[in-house]
Each structure stands twice: as C-alpha cells, then as structure tokens.
Length: 190
Image (cartoon, rainbow, N blue to C red; front, side, top):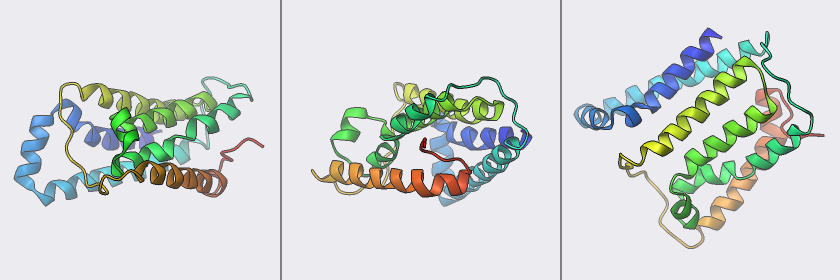
C-alpha cells in the first residue's frame, strides 16, 4: 500500500500545484522554462508508475471495506461511456467543451465514481477516492484561478463529432481488449 500512497502523493501532488499555489507555479515555470516541464513530467511519470505498482501489489492482499451488489457491474460501464469523449473534448474545441467548461475533470470524476460503485477495497478507495477528491477540487478551484491555454485542434463544427466517435471507439477498445489485459478485470458484465 506504501507504493500506492506515495505514487498518489507524487502524481496528485504535482497536479495540485496549480490549485494551491498558481502564482508560485507560474513564476517557477517561467523561471525554469523547459526544465519545469521536464521536472513536472518526471515526477508525474514516477508517481504514475508507483500508483500502478502499488495498486497491483495491493490487489494481492485486498482489504475489503464494502461489498457491492452484482447489479452495480451494469452501472459502471454506463457511467464510463462519456469518459473517453470527455477526455478528448479539451483538445477538440466545440460545443461539448464550451458547455462543460472542464470536460476532462468531469471525465476523471465519472471514472472515479464509476469504479467506487463497483470496487470496495482499501486500495480502490485510495486510488479512485483520491482522484475523485482531486478532480472536484480542481473544478472548484477554477473559480479563483485562470486556465492556462493548451494546444488544441482548430475550432470546427465537426470537433464534437470527432470527440464522440473517437471517444466511443476508444471506449470499446479499452473495455473489450485493454482493460482485461492491462488491469486483469473484465470491464463489461457478462
């Protein structure tokens, strides 16, 4: 569990700098330039690797906090349907991005809730609960901080179609092939 906790602290910690200290982050990023990006990326990757390793190890000796009814396995895939399109939406500006303002954080929120509904171990609560709290905090923090621009595709009317079609294709690929292979759990109920 130590790897998981340390990975979450690193990953979510570095991703929370803009929430808790946006002015410091901007000054430091300006002063360090590409070194900031490199350091940020290294800490993020290290945290992500520790999360994967820690979660995998924790699954060998799970501490069950709550049991979920079987029918919840049908709710999770439905909640996951919009996740991949919402992850893509910030990079393809259109009506989805405009209407939701923070589509990626909404995707993380849905992903976390969908998994907390179906998984009740301590490691699940730490992983998905940690990301849920972080995503909600990030959304709320936009009230007092400005968003930094990100590289996007040119605004077009077709961007929403691209987001939905590509996102749903990724959903199918992940649910049917990648989730069982990478996570070891069937994503869709049989």
